[in-house]
Amino acid sequence: MPTFEPVIMKGIGEMDLADIDVYERGGGFSVLRKVMREMTPDAVAAVVTESNLRGRGGAGFPTGRKWSFLPKDGRPRYLVCNCDEAEPGTFKDRMLLEKTPLQLIEGLVISAYAMGAKQAYTYIRGEFLEGSRIFRRALAAAHSRNYVGDRILGSDFSLDIVVHRGSGAYICGEETAQLESIEGRRGEPRLKPPFPAIAGLYGMPTVVNNVETLCYVKHIVDRGAQWFAKIGPEKSPGPKIMSVSGHVRKPGNYEIPLGISARELIEEYGGGLLPGRTLKAFQPGGASSAALFEEDIDVAIDFDSLAAKRTMLGSGGFVVMDDTACMVNCARTLTRFFEHESCGQCTPCREGGQWVARMVARLEAGEGSEEDLRVLNVINNTITGTNLCPLGDSIMPFLASVLKRFPDEFAAHVAHGGCPLKRMAAVVA
Amino acid sequence: MTPERLARGQELVARYPKPQSALVPFLQYCQEQDGYVTAQAMRDAAELVGITPGEVESIASFYTLLFKEPVGKHIIQVCRTLSCMLGGAEDLQSYIKRKLGIGHLETSADGQYYYEEVECLAACDRAPCLQHNLEYHYDVTPANFDQLLESWQAAPPQPVMPAE
Image (cartoon, rainbow over all chains, first blue to last red):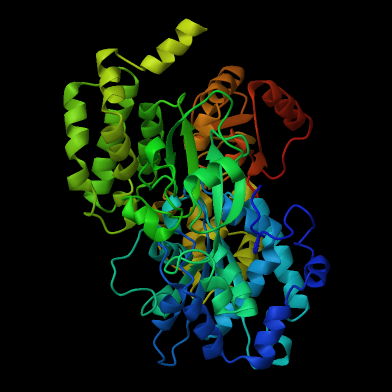
């Protein structure tokens, strides 16, 4: 059994941390008290920078550096908490929102203090209605005890937090699309630069941070930068929640020290594969990440080790596929996802995404051709790297990786007019 | 616009530095009352935030949880993305469609059920999952779907799509 003691998942499943009395009894808001009593905003920011915390939303950008880009020019600045979790295979932010909303609020207030933001927005995915209700109740409770609002805990610092519920659009998880969405427009990503730190929400300096990132800020300020920096690899430190799903015995959220192997994650945390099955492929970082395979099982789970394998840690959506999974079926599901979620601004993503999804669907249905395979093998170069935001660049990695690793499986769909795996299953049955 | 709707609209506008930020929250509120986003709601929204009804329609059309035409009282949204597919979502989808006699994005003739296959609902550890009027149901199988359906019939949801 894993021995790593959870940090931000501590107490989840054991007590009702959404209840402010329970949360306080477990030490909740003591870090905020300490910050308000004895730390300057710069001191808080310095600890976060020194910890080398990297954003837990997907991009892995150093949090302290992101904050440091805010210009000191007297304009109002905003903190946006990104709770628009929709990367397929990822379900950690929803858990944090529902199970420990006050921890999120504490991290959010500390972070807003560090960057000098008096106004924050929490953008909650539209489907998370229940989570948004839990969060609103937690916010009202925190407000009633002066952890949020005017002159927090008797200090000069005031912070208002507005909850903004999304209404169904994966792309609004991209930070500039999220700002557009809060401003009441279509969630279409903006051209960068300018980056949000310079011209973000309502044209003002803005930082967008992920839910999990903000939760860690609280613990880094409490336990010190060195505590965090010493967990895991030097350039990719700290604990991280991995959402493990697919063909494992115990799917769920697991808080791991970064740097453990995929094998350990699957076997020790995820309970291993189902009886009699073998590993075929896994996606380490959500639908946008390239697949890895049986031979990669000892890869370390951290930002840089996965990047070295030409895939990514992303948001930590770890999906396991065993030998019963058809790679064409998996690729069809994921290419359809990106086709559906493209905002439509960039031609390679809008048109390319549609054609790729159609070709893969054709292959799965047994109506594909050699020509489809040829096109799928070269189209990567014309879609990837030619779009405003990362969505377009996420269409191809999984498909390209499985096409390269299992070319025969794709070819068999053409030769047999459909899925040989399904046919075998039907014969056995 | 009814005085009640205007009052709620103004409350939402007051939350933000600029009125247009209240547009989607206002449409969510109208949908909660009307069951979908009506043409009148879009005109009201345009008036409230100071843009044209055409612009409102363009924005509303971007978001999948805003329905631009009437849908059933029971909104059933089944996940179709990778982890749920690996967990048997396709069998569940076929079963529900057969059972209700409707397809993807369709409402039953009696106006009771609307069925949609949606993208990842962030509940991959409990696959396959679905939402019924935005309420989660986990580890759904053809067998326990029947029980769910009975419980929904016994206690019809109010409202269909809550705003907050």
